[in-house]
Length: 581
Ligand code: ATP
Ligand code: MG
Image (cartoon, rainbow, N blue to C red; front, side, top):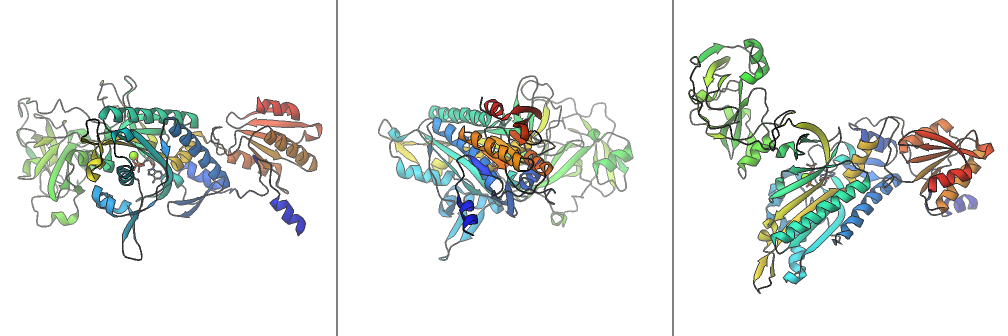
């Protein structure tokens, strides 16, 4: 008893982790609910465990990777002069009422009530609280500029928490905020952050792109996202191979130039003709029946804008981007119509709407629905369509908007060449907020001339826990995880593949590597076959694997470089110099 206790509590030398004691149970099978590679591998390799939907526990190996990411983020934030703080995650309702986000966030916000009946929330992001902090602490222009950051747990009740730690309901974020007295000051704080982010993602070994973005609930004038290209990503970005233009597809806006030009509407087109088209409520069924391409049909989507029904027309082969539409019509609230909205509206025939019979319903359209163009579209009667429906002759467009979903090959808004679309994971987002929150909270400082000056702000986020998954997505291969050196949970994974001789050599190797300052994971687990240990080593994904195996009796180990799968035999001391070189 006494002996076991002593071994269990003997401190290991620094940087040496023994797998015989490490809480890192690997799994042979993928978790049933795992949709993405990083989710499967991080669970199977024992880095994280699911606590509940979108809520994760970080086990020892995972915590090390998370800490390595945080350390790099911290070093680069400190290097631009940002100061680290730690604010609460449990926040009072009041400041979020002041900004309007208590209600604007909708179901995304975790709201809770304390024993006295006061409302609270779990912070999804902290613009409000930082604004209040600076209002309390800074009184003069001499106190600014100031940049503050924290690495903290955030809470968002995501509709679809999935993909493991890629989209959690509880997750780690680095959020920072800049406070300046002038627009030039804000531009400089923004530039410093942008450059720090490039250094952070480069040091992390993450392939990334900077793209224009839409600002969403955050508000403010301009923002850019840092995206990590990966199949598992939920974002799509467009890039132009010719001029380098890059934007989140939500933020790609096409010029409206071609709209409005009157091309002598109707000239040369036959008169409008109604057609019997039974069972054709979709574009596909209609185009099939008539033998025309989908692009010759006009699709009319009904939406409610602040409760009023509005129709949006786009060519039948295109989709309406509801995000873009909402952005154009903000602050009006845009919702899809439901079956109930059709009751008492005999003029609106679901599936057979055409702009020629819409009466007072406002008609918005994509610029491709230009004056003089002719379409096949609904005839506002069930099972009936109309052809030769000409814009400017048979119907009018009230307003042209850029609302279609961007497609591969669409013209680049800046140079006209074909855009390329790729999937990516949003790992960072930087906002020039301007004075939105300073206005809401009355954040002024005394200016140089002795008069109050309104402060201007930036806010900047990095999804620290999401970065771990993004790195896993980009680097993993068929055998398992494969970490970039900067974030790996160890530098070297030493495997004792055999019996006493192998264990002895492995122990020696591990201790000497640790003494040389490398972080070592030693697989000293008794009773496991070499095959099982090697499979685990590959799954865990440390950059170097040292195997004390068949040639151990001659003092020879095998060095495996995980990312390149190269293998070399070396006598032990030579292997040490190879790894520490
Ligand atoms: P998304 O569009 O993916 O929901 P967001 O635009 O709402 O993200 P921001 O408010 O910009 O996110 O938050 C800053 C950063 O925090 C994001 O760039 C992302 O890296 C990270 N992040 C946001 N939501 C989550 C989440 N649910 N799980 C993990 N990381 C997240
Ligand atoms: Mg974002």
